[in-house]
Amino acid sequence: VQLQASGGGLVPPGGSLRLSCQASGEIPGMIDMGWYRQAPGKERELVARISASGSVSILDSMKDRFDISRDGVKNAVFLQMSSLKPEDTAVYYCTAIWLKMYWGQGTQVTVSS
Image (cartoon, rainbow, N blue to C red):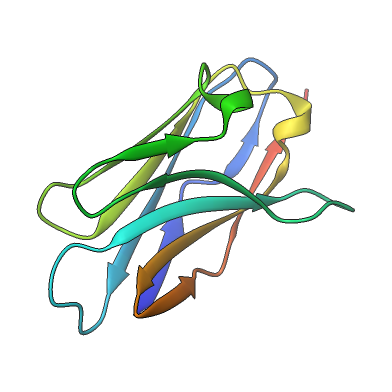
């Protein structure tokens, strides 16, 4: 499984970004996908995940600002981030689970004025 993420960038505090990730490879159907992030000097943490059937789980501290969704047909996942804060600055990694966990290459999100 290969994961291609996009959508990161520089955004001012209070701004919004939408990350996208497309899974490809020999995948027989829909798979669980998600997003992790790793801020400088911190451990990687789970941000949100969505199951193959569409069940969503978002870290409590982000539920009011972040939303995860997926394409209903393709294995593509999206992370809509709003009201961004400087502490949201991190590398965001797309993940997928099919027999094992796969990681994308990461996309940098920088929240700064």
